[in-house]
Length: 348
Image 1 (tube, rainbow, N blue to C red):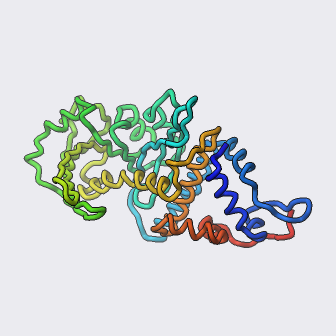
Image 2 (cartoon, rainbow, N blue to C red; image 1 turned 90 degrees about the vertical axis):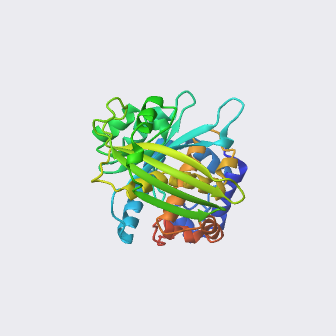
Image 3 (cartoon, helix red, strand yellow; image 1 turned 30 degrees about the vertical axis):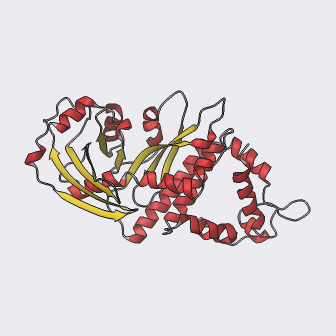
């Protein structure tokens, strides 16, 4: 079953909707000529048996169109940048089953989930990287990911099969590649871009250096790598000591295709996916949801992605406030979803 809170909130929203709104949404008349939104038990049964793959594909395609339209309307051009990252559904675990885990592809900037898949308990995210991205048209796009996915097969496939670019983070748990990057003569390179910001009680600054690596790193396990990147981060929280961190990465983009500022934004922008996960947890309390049966956990995550993407592409900045307004006035959901509030109230 879906937990009582999730199914109850969906049912309560339907109970607030009048007959006209239900007609627009396709709710059919009962034999006694009235319309009723589905009950919580019906909602629970439907979520459990939904085709999760088909639902994710449909929502991802719809959100991709909305994302393209929103960028065009705002005059935002340039490359599309997509982050790949995973998220555990903490409340979905039971004594007889581990927590469910999802892998998603989310656009930088305006966070829209283009694809999502479930990572089974007997596998890991890396094996799902290519199946997740395979249905998407990625030509010319830049894909960002953390060290978990920085493996030869994935990056070669992105460049050779999908005609995409990548920015791959390298960590010390990849000792050969990390040592090669660390041993480059970074002292001979001047800082090429810096940025700083304040917020959430801390101050952070970042600087980036880049080096062409064609022929320099012959043994690196990253096909088509053209640039090595070194980002130095300084972070100072109020009342705490300053922390420093150096991050290495490689990219298939060369110096003519991306400036140091753009590369820095790609690395920093990867955490857009974490911001979206935070919205799912805070605005939609995903981490405390106890949905666990059948396809319901993934389906609910998909509907949360749909809500966030639909609102973000319309310029919403406070998702929690906006969703509360829609909860209290259900008809406000129609323009968000691009539905014209016209329906034949005499239909079946």
